[in-house]
Image 1 (tube, rainbow, N blue to C red):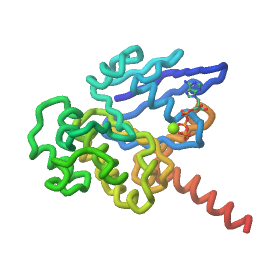
Image 2 (image 1 turned 30 degrees about the vertical axis):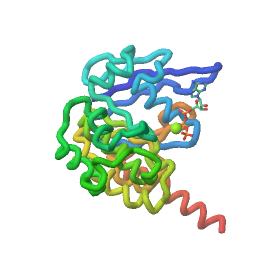
Image 3 (image 1 turned 90 degrees about the vertical axis):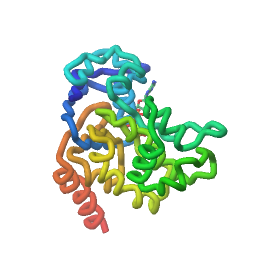
Image 4 (image 1 turned 90 degrees about the horizontal axis):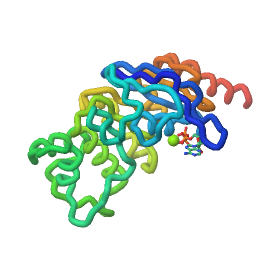
Length: 235
Ligand SMILES: Nc1ncnc2c1ncn2[C@@H]1O[C@H](COP(=O)(O)OP(=O)(O)OP(=O)(O)O)[C@@H](O)[C@H]1O
Ligand SMILES: [Mg+2]
């Protein structure tokens, strides 16, 4: 459904993305991982249309979308989870979900989505989106805003950022159910082993290149266990 062909992105004489080729199928849960600065966020910004590649093509459902604006890409069904939902005085969770879905939704539909992300819908649907919500609650609301769009491709950039490990452990089951919640392909940048465990495939990026693509099982066996062994050997 999504194909990247020979993507190059250069800034200040540095190759930030260096000949990226990638094919992502429909209904997959794909994780992107790799060291800081390896180009992961830049890659998803290019898919989203926030940045334009210097050369290369992005094909989405058979159509060349390389030159399309963020809005046009969003209309085709590419959705990005922002780290912090917008906060306006008086805006409720229901308002936020209505704006995100870009159509008239009923309170019942909003409540269904909130329940799917593990929030007690009755308690939250009319609540104002403000500082009184915890980081974990905001994160769930953020996931609900992308889920309600039911887009074909949903992108998350380090959803674990800014929430404590305890809250994250509670969130993991939402990611486990992401296939049913968003009903499309999920592309998620993460360093969290528990997210990597539930992915169909893991893309490892290094120095602006795709180092390898492996199934979750292969990746965790080849990478995490080796690090464990190293740790044991150096003791
Ligand atoms: N517009 C830009 N101008 C100059 N440098 C840029 C630009 N965009 C990205 N970079 C650089 O490209 C490199 C890759 O950045 P990117 O944010 O994609 O990394 P990342 O893999 O997401 O890292 P992290 O794990 O820290 O989030 C970094 O060194 C960054 O400073
Ligand atoms: Mg990043």
